Image (cartoon, rainbow, N blue to C red; front, side, top):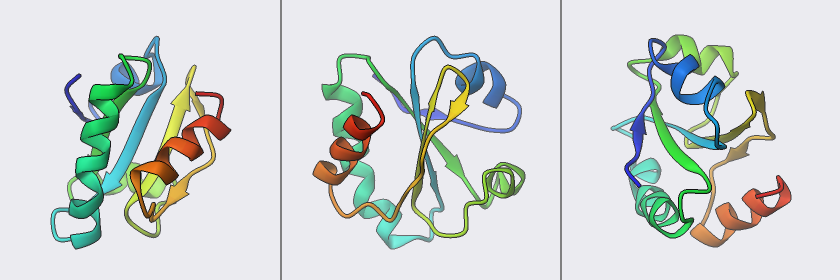
Length: 107
């Protein structure tokens, strides 16, 4: 499953109105840690059988969305389920930590 590039223009259709849960990763290209955790998100996207869609929001290009969801530290991940905002995961350390966080949110 491909990773979605989320913008303010497509946020509603790709996230809020999505039929499946969407894990949104708030990141920036200059953030070394964001680039380090990115392969784990790619793997999760491939392994979850389409149960969860993965999307990314570049906070430099989409400051409005970062402010709306009070993203102060990157990477920050938020799971959106049925249009509802889940508990954020800030600065995930590993793929395992992301998987555990998803389980805690009913995934």
